[in-house]
Image (tube, rainbow over all chains, first blue to last red; front, side, top):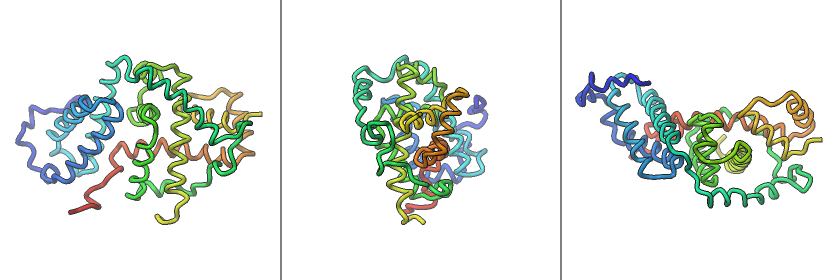
Length: 208
Length: 68
């Protein structure tokens, strides 16, 4: 991960077809930026992280067999950059936004009855073989919409956990919350994301 | 007896830490009897898998679509 060997390749090492594919690069950049902005809640820092990751990866583009390999590589670098920034920052979420998080108790009232059992119309349905969805472009559009529909803090901690793959303690330090807070937020984000995917994808037959 | 709110919380936490034996057992009993929580327990690992796949760039594949 650290051996980018930028110097050995130099700026003229870029005569590959990937680097001439403006549409691919624009899209990749847009995707990275979306992710980084959500993670860092600061468009300037996000832009910096994306630029650095892209420059670093593209200087090595020649050694990539194709777009998929480049994408994986570029996101691995971005992930590390974001993790670095998050570790340096003591707190990313201000007190007022955490308060709002606490007010989201009504989430649970919609999903569960007073005894804590599923409301009849909120009970998770069977998704069949969800892996199939991973190969469908349309699914990813729905997935993205559902991710964006999560409240900012929930999306952030969920992505820190599942994409940046920070440890629980690291997330708690970065966001300035307790482990219990984090567990509550992850629980809510999973409930919401699940519900959104179910309503907008798994219970709709149109993709089959 | 555990309710669905508690069961889904434990299912969520099982992604982030190892549950205790007592937690595992009471969760197992609940999930056996509750189809909603059973489905939830299958969906949560999928969310994690999908998030990781999305992060790897499966989210958008412009070479396969949207050519102008």
